[in-house]
Length: 522
Image (cartoon, rainbow, N blue to C red):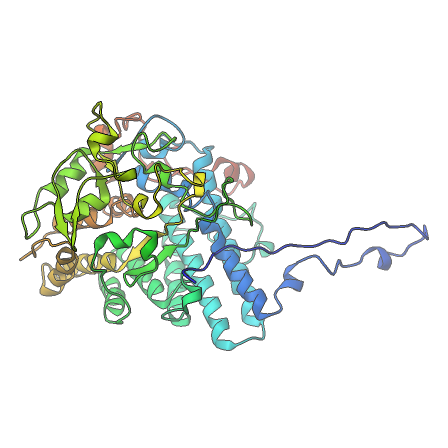
């Protein structure tokens, strides 16, 4: 089996019948009966099978269309300095600092993330008490720690001032919870990932690919430390991944972004998407699409029915600023972007050229001319044989997994941690040069922080990290706000107010809970 189809199908069955009143003096004991067929925490968490269903249910929100199958991209990549989203809408609003607290886009992503937290809390409360294989029980509990930490990592970096809930929903008044200090949330993320790292296996069997591993936990623990500037702790975690012998760079960079090479040796964590033929609006429920519904939001103009976007020119220029050891364009440019060029690069036995759906050249795609630069990464049109982003199955016609943490990222984060500790050392150089060598780029003899930043753009664009890099470096204002042309296709950046680096707390949550304070700037 190529990958686990992470979704849950737990159905509560109710008896349907005719109730005859035989005695008008029925006692309370007769009336207050427990329905033996209704699922509840007291009746569900009994067996190993229940534990497994529960944790798969905690994974399930990742493939909700509110989360990674589509809407999360508007809370991450659409906010960065590469993407210039077309038109003004709630999908592009966060990118030009005009998102409102009643925006569906923000509310849906927030809800999906907290849904994952809530389900992980249920697993952590109940599974340790189930009599089952102890090792597998630990694995499942470790998965829940990882899922909770991962969702809190996302919530903290998009909203910053968030409630921290670590018990089942029935044990807390959700209408009176308060927001935790960011430092408290970071501490919880660190603790959860430390637990996950100690309890998760290094790998799963082939029919369970996609479940969290100890390597994924170590990678995200290092990332959590890095985001806080804890360089030594981050370096140690990345080193543990680098010396584990589990991960390596794929020979061909492009193999990290196609359905054919999912869950490969470079991948620490990816969202398991499935071209399941279910074309409805995806949801956290059976019989709803679990495919790559975000692809129409990356696809070039004319190959999507969404507003779409273009890529700002500076990103292509960065790729073109230096050549490979063979005097050609960085091969990662062709995987990442679609632009007007006839130049080619020979790489891994192939001749790379600028192509999009149906293997069309830029002139074929835009015979009347266009001039814009578009995205290409993750579209996987060649593997699927798709003519456009919603071909053969609508929203969910593509099953290409979304890679969120790769070994290349670990190497670059290690280089950053090492650089901040000790400068341009041989260890930092070796890490970044491994990434460059895979793309046939010449080795650096020394590096600056700018070199690390540039390499992250070339290697990791559209992998949901660039905006958060700018945020943690304190550069959202200087890089995006002060350069309104980067958002010229929507509304510039005039709507910015201090604090809008983060998204507004959903208004319905603020209205229902007087203890929640709206984020600054809104």
